[in-house]
Image (cartoon, rainbow, N blue to C red; front, side, top):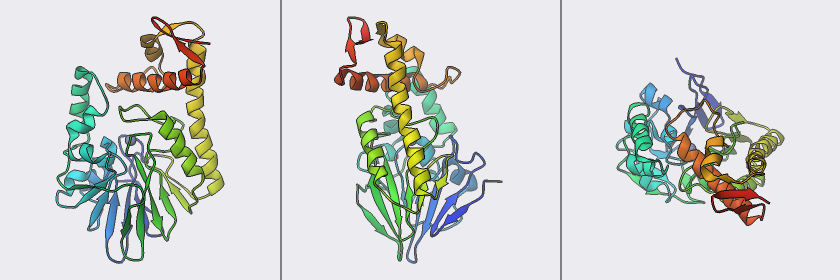
Length: 296
Ligand SMILES: [Zn+2]
């Protein structure tokens, strides 16, 4: 039993019982007259034992566990990813190191990668950067580099259908995630601006917002998503009306709700707080103190 597969022109979204919610995600199967590409083999693809079609190529938007969980089913199929993601797609230990966790937490996540996501790495991973085009016969897939979530995070444009896949620019109320070592708040904001200028018939996300088919609706969702970044700034500025140590800021949490006790939460909160504090400092809104930071 899995969620419905839905077709958008030559693109099939492989539905999951979770509706694309983490730990699952939305995989795409794209068929041309000469070849078939699978995008982001999810936990659902892994559960199904495959996507139900022969696959000639796999493209991965970025090396996060929920986007590579099904790779183990395709040991001989070539994989492409942005140059900045290749090493982490090849090797789960590189993926893990990218989160910058302390040893005890890293060990817990190492077990999740193995036991929940069955991440094994892959032997045939090549680099494909911004603008790389894969011709499938009467249908093409173009890589669109949209960094910030991770350094090499990419979207994909399928033509002539006009299906733009946004990967983990997932337009959820959770908001943008930039909690890895390679994440960048500045790049994320730039990627959101780039997307504002792009047109498509369908805008597909890797998680539960799914596919939007109206540009106005897409732009509104993009604005709401970007507004989460501003809310995190406001939360910080409010908190720093009194001087506070970084540890206090991290404990307050900008990203996860207090009940979320995942082993990666601490590292993600720390990284997110530091990116915001750096930006607010450059904007002259926050200054360092001997023990931490304060708003000015
Ligand atoms: Zn991700």
